[in-house]
Length: 449
Picture 1 (cartoon, one colour):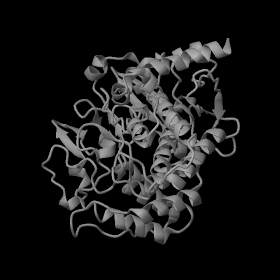
Picture 2 (cartoon, one colour):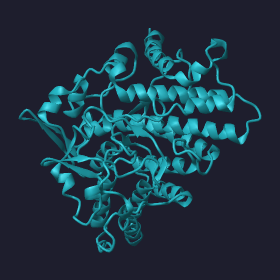
Picture 3 (cartoon, helix red, strand yellow):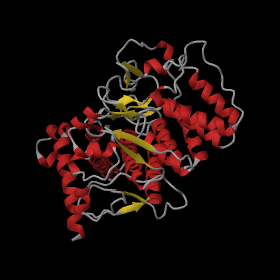
Picture 4 (cartoon, helix red, strand yellow):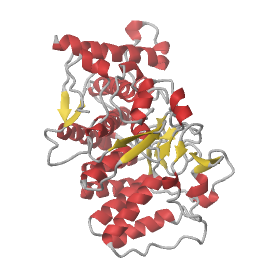
């Protein structure tokens, strides 16, 4: 019965995969030929952009703070599960409606197909090795996205027993997988990134493909989530050693609807968080609390936001349109570096990193260097800048969880039709529920809620 149940789960994934891999299968209409064999075949699978592989889940941003929607917008949401994610209520989410679960399952399957196909080859060349590295990177990133959404903050003291995610490491639908521990989950992510770093080109000629700089950046993000600050610092610095360009916000056009171009100079690797019905700039409004964190001479206050009557919408995506940026960029690496330096007691170096970043964000001549002598105050300043700089990138939800694990005591609240919903610090609701249809037909363990 166990095999039967889990096979049904992956049959559902298979149907999604068969319906979305159009480019490759259309080119190989004979089923006997629809098996990737060449570097071009494998790269085509990974380049199915942005429909399948490079699209990121929105669930963490939907559940996080910093924005609100009107009661009318809430009532008009087309899916009930969007309303329930917005208010952190338990919800029955069919598999086909859960973007995070569906998207990561499809991406992981594709990555596994490429990994199996290339690892089985003899006498691999650098091109195939690079493609293999891309597949390991994509699988690691998908697993990390899932961990951010479906697991609680990583706690080294309880990681061996805390729930992680289920780790599918091959494309065989008949093989049963079980939900791993948090320790196993994060170790699998790091293992894949270790392999990716050995195989990838240092830089990619295409911003939609991963590179060694991107893999170091993702590994820095992973170690930061684990609270391993020396390792996070080391990897952020290795990423920046390869590529460290920052945009000068003074050179951007504040009159443009979307001031930031897609593939701009800070982008190491581009991925897309599709603009959901909640998070689109026509519906989501920025909270005054977040907007008021920006000073008047801070160019981000005009470049990231747009007034809508008496309200504020977000327009600062690094994708040049209403979709959101979920990739790897240099500004995140600067912030990881600064945070880790501050946590490791290297306040002067941390301040210097922040000065380098923030001097590109303020009007020319208006920025004043950081004069904070207290280490804790400096760390709080850096974390606030991280929040301001990395909005709607799929990171804030995970950040709140890790801050609360350290005692930040951040609670979230929303009001809908006069009723206030509150998410308390370290609540089990910070691990969103696995789609109920998956639970019903498999032995995947549901999150307590």
